[in-house]
Image (cartoon, rainbow, N blue to C red; front, side, top):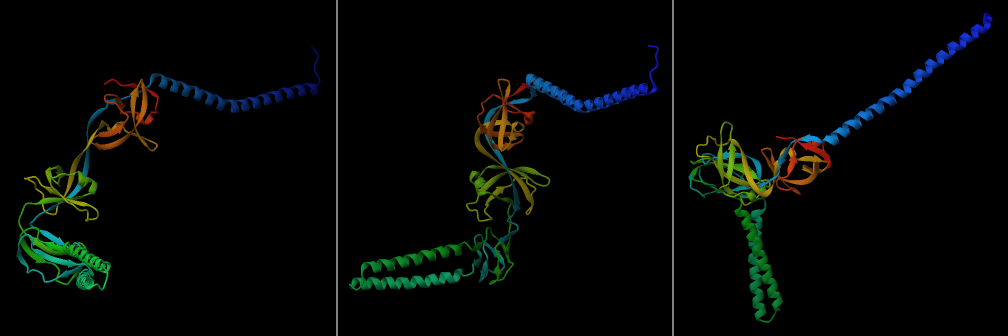
Length: 362
C-alpha cells in the first residue's frame, strides 16, 4: 500500500481483466445460443402435454344421434326422353341391307311390317341351310331304304338322321335371327320412308317415320340390376325444365341389347306439360330391406375402411360398417351396431377408437 506499481505491471493486469471480460461475453453468447432452443422445446412439450392431458381428461365435446332400424331406401337418378305416337322414328336394329318390296307411303295399321333388314350373308346362309336340309333328307330316306334291304347297318341310318336334325336346328336359329330384324308399326299412322329398298344401313339408322295420335310417355334405360328391382306401377319422380310430377312405370324390358341397358317405359302425369323429345330427370326409389339408419355425417373413412363412432362407457369406439343406401342426409348401414345407441356426428374426423368424449346436451 502506498506504493505505485511499475507501468508495465499495471498494463498487464489491465489486459488480463479485459481478456477475461471478453471471454465471459463469448461464453454467455455461446451458452444462450445452445440453451435457448432447448428451453423452448421443453416449454413447448410441457404445454402440449398439459393440453393433451386436459383434452383426454375432460373428453372431446361431440354431438350425437340415435341409431334406428328402418327400411333402406335407395334412390336412383335416371334420364328419360319423352316419346309420342305423334312422331315416331323407326331405326335399323342391325347393320345390313333393307329388303324390298316396301309398303307405299301413307296410312298403315298397327303391326304392319315396315321393313326387313338382312344382315350380311344371312339370307345366303338360310338358303344354304335349306339346300343342306333337302340333301340330308334325301340321304336319310336313301339310307332307310338301304337298311331295309340289308345293305347298310342301322348306325348309318342314325348318322343320317342326326345330320338332318342338325341342319334343321341351324336353319331355325337363322330364321329366328331374321325375324328379329323386322320393323313393324307400333301404332296406326301415316308412314314415310327415309331410305329406299336395297340401301345398306348401319345399326340405329333411321328407316322411316310414323305420324300418329296418342298421349306421350317417357322412355329411360337402366342397368339390368336396377331393372330386376323395378315393377310395373312403381312410382317415379319426374322433373322437367319448369314442372315436376309423379309418373308410374308402365313396363320393363326383357333384354339388354341397347348398349347393355334395359328399356323402361314410364306413364307421365295426367296434366303433364312434357313435350315429345324433351329430356326429363327421373328418380326411382328402391327398398333394399331393413338396416340401421344413421345420419350421413356420422360416416367417416379411415384408411380404406368405412366406420362410425359410437359412445360406449364415455369413449368413442370405431365400428366398421357397410353402406346399403344413402339419401337426403341419411344413410342405411350394416355393422355391429345396436338400436338406440348414440353415433357421433361431429368432430369424428379427429377421433380415434378409445378417445374420451363428452356428449353435448341438446
